[in-house]
Amino acid sequence: DPEGGALRRLRPLSITRGTANLHLGQFGLLPIMVNAESDSAKPKFLIFGKSGWIGGLLGEILKEAGTDFEYASARLEDRAAVIADLDRVKPTHVLNAAGLTGRPNVDWCEDHKIEVIRANVVGTLTLADVTNERGIHLTIYATGCIFHYDKDFPQDSGKGFTEDDTPNFLGSYYSRTKALVEGLLKEYPNTLVLRVRMPIVADLTYPRNFITKIIKYDKVVNIPNSMTVLPELLPMSIEMAKRKLTGIMNYTNPGVVSHNEILEMYKKYIDPEFTWSNFTLEEQAKVIVAPRSNNLLDTKRIEGEFPEILGIKESLIKHVFEPNAAKKDEVLAAVKEMRGR
Image (tube, rainbow, N blue to C red; front, top):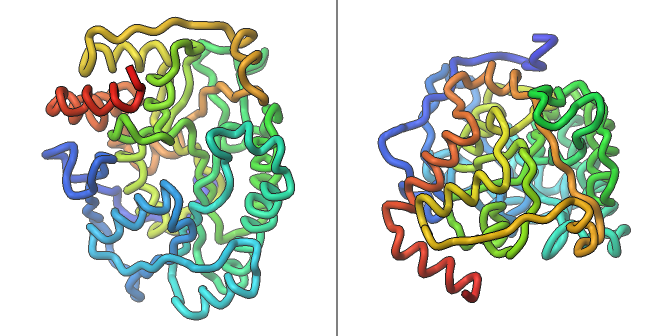
């Protein structure tokens, strides 16, 4: 499939629908049920990023599905250790959720450039190279924060950046390294690069959750953006790996949602007394170090693979706000404690 970049194609993923929050905990992750012919070799996954957010969630999904997997022990930039992990585990698929985004946010990367290069550039390319040498499929959870609205892709135009578009946002050092690496990863025929954006889970107190971040602020910008609802999309990424899809994938729910729209949902479903105010990008720039990316990503490719994927607003309601509304008092108390007010 020269346009879709798939080495082979199986029947679509079917996700159990009956409940929004099962055994995968506070993140609202759903178990998966794959309706497809199995490979001659039973898949075995090796996950890089055991101590990270997405790496931990991937392990929970694979465990729930009864899929064989292990976590890697090597640091990405240590080529010999990465090879040792691959030779020890002998995986059919590698999932890379390791890397540096910065704590508490990407501003950290501006003052830690060598560390960022070592993990996000050298390490990622090392993993792509050694898995390619061994014919192992590699999925990389990367970023879509390498684009921003401009005159060719205006905000509110409905025109989204495709997988073939060249990154146009280099405002932060984090995004610069990610854009650089994405261009190089295109040369590896075994690799699928997923452009994650503003990832969201059901736990409204988890610090990396985009919703948690904005409900903590007194002021937010109000810009429509593509976003990734992990409870819905993470199981799909495992199926993408099994299908051996390659190339670039805009890994977001279709459509856009603004900061205000999310906070209105929070107010409607959880806290009717919640208030906030907006400020401009110019005002925001005074309280952050590096500019932030705002964009719409085109989702035709992921919709082609998974026609059942929900639009961003529908997915937020189904996977985040309705599950939390069912235990509203508990959630509201936890959020107020987290916010300190």
